[in-house]
Amino acid sequence: MKKEYWDVSDEQVIEKTGKPISFWMETLKDFKAEEKKSNEVVAFLQEMHAVPRYWARTLTTHYLKGLE
Image: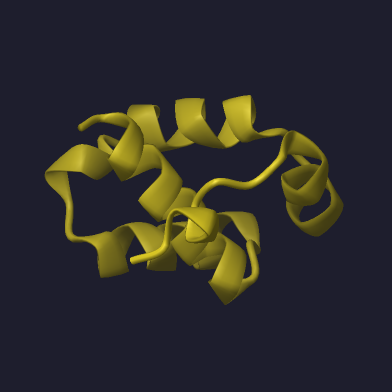
């Protein structure tokens, strides 16, 4: 997977989701995203936070790559 896929700016994330990256990283930490399947995390962001699918996937990948 290309690094550009998850290497996004705060401005891009705010524009598309209304919240900064730090908010989403904390939300995924609280959700214990690292213990779940990525599709489950994407669905959580889409269903509970109305994040568009592309951005839900991007944020999930960004979060999980940050744990490596």
